[in-house]
Length: 356
Ligand SMILES: [Zn+2]
Image (cartoon, rainbow, N blue to C red; front, top):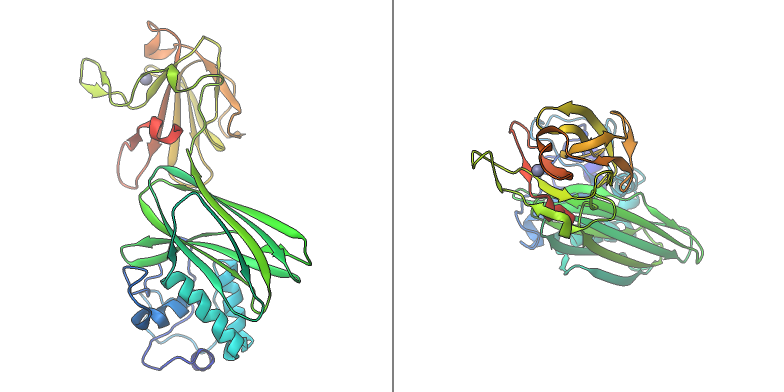
């Protein structure tokens, strides 16, 4: 540990421990600032630790270890910074500048509006990193595309951080975009923003490597329309409408379509349940690979998938009908969107917000 302190030029007053494995969801609690632009001074060290991923876990007592072991970087940029420290490259001027640039990008990002199209260049001799900050009004799917053209073989790191009340937490990273000798390579990063949040994107190339890049970021509706060949005009009973004489509210939307029209997956997902119930008739539940979303399809005339199957957005699930308690109404798909929160029931959300 003392060795690492020396490599990083850290003062003994700052407790640093290694040994905890940071996870994607673990907030980097040593970011003392509750706002990105609260000035570098107090948060500079904290940010350096973020860069290197050496954030102490709250439970750590500070005794720590004297070895740079038992540490698993959570994303490629962090692994690269850690490797710099281990190889003593962090002691060099170029190393210090690279680390400082990474830190600056997080602490003083440039506010931008989406959609964004940003062309830039990292010069080999000038350590630099791009840091941009934007807000997302949920629910949206955010799509970041990065194209890199390297002067020589180079990897460019694309990392996304989320602002919370406690500071900045790492959210998701793309695999490094590797580019070589004038050949352009590109990468796409998609994520769902279902809660209001502010995000920071950091872009940085390996130390002493030049590259030109183009970064675009845009948002779109998170879900595809669930009935093939129809659109919002087919929705005739909206979210929150009275049901059972006002004793309950409609927890989805009804999409009216000809019997036998294909109901399709609104997103890439697992088919988690296929069943027949008294109220919903033939129903299907979907859930994505990650996250807490559930999609509910009801009153199907027929199921065309089985539980456990993986479906791509647009793939057919079943046929529109009027089974269950819809037996007296014209054929329609009851479509529900649920965002489950731990320890809470329900979570029904208005599907319209996710479709448009
Ligand atoms: Zn309904």
